[in-house]
Image 1 (cartoon, rainbow, N blue to C red):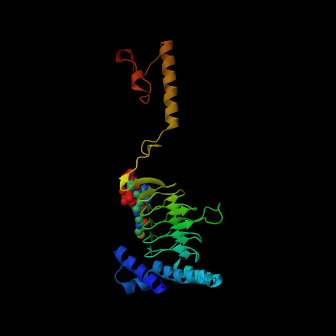
Image 2 (cartoon, rainbow, N blue to C red; image 1 turned 30 degrees about the horizontal axis):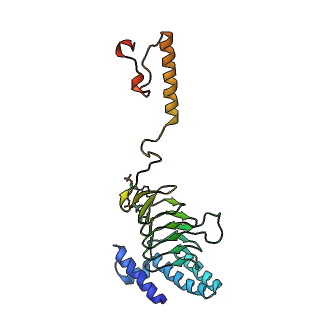
Image 3 (cartoon, rainbow, N blue to C red; image 1 turned 60 degrees about the horizontal axis):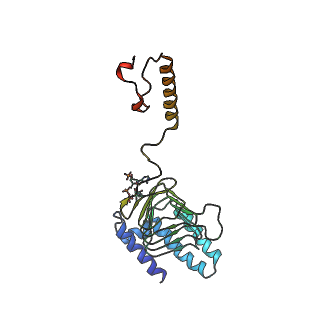
Length: 233
Ligand SMILES: CC(C)(COP(=O)(O)OP(=O)(O)OC[C@H]1O[C@@H](n2cnc3c(N)ncnc32)[C@H](O)[C@@H]1OP(=O)(O)O)[C@@H](O)C(=O)NCCC(=O)NCCS
């Protein structure tokens, strides 16, 4: 496919995805994400022909103009939309499929621990929201969504929604995934639990010594509460 054809497909994607896109002409002139992608597509051709210095120079110029840093060796498919784009970083060994949308502040980076393939692979139709970081040679399955501000360090199966730091899957194929490991609403409170245990011990000692004067904390299991007559409150 020629670069001209690639640019046309990228424009088509923007016109389809962005309700704010007024016309193709305006997008061409004012969308930094589109401009950065055009520069990448040329730089990538140079890179493939072994003209690495020229490719890197082109990338550098695009980065200074748009604030979007795409390594010319990265592999990026067709119909890709980088919305707004400032702060987007796409590493050297990153692979991006077709119909992918990236928002501003997205990093497709390395963890700093690997060599060789060290950047993520995004399959077709993936969306990575603003500020999200996908780090390491992980694979994000087709049509998955990465929530704003998430940090993803593990593979994600297709059709998933991932949010949080570290990223966890909250939806799969449109259905909510229950977090079986931890109830995020009723988080355990170890300090409170320890107080409750101490309260109970004091109460038991007072009962044994016949000096108990008040009900112990309601945080202690109700089954152990004394009967009303017994309680001197
Ligand atoms: C993740 C996102 C794409 C929504 O995907 P979705 O599959 O429709 O998921 P839902 O909206 O049903 O959210 C699923 C759960 O994740 C939570 N969630 C969604 N986005 C989240 C985020 N960024 N961080 C933390 N939790 C988030 C929701 O509150 C919801 O939790 P609940 O089930 O306990 O209520 C969206 O929330 C998001 O992050 N959009 C940002 C897009 C963006 O970058 N826009 C910038 C334009 S300039």
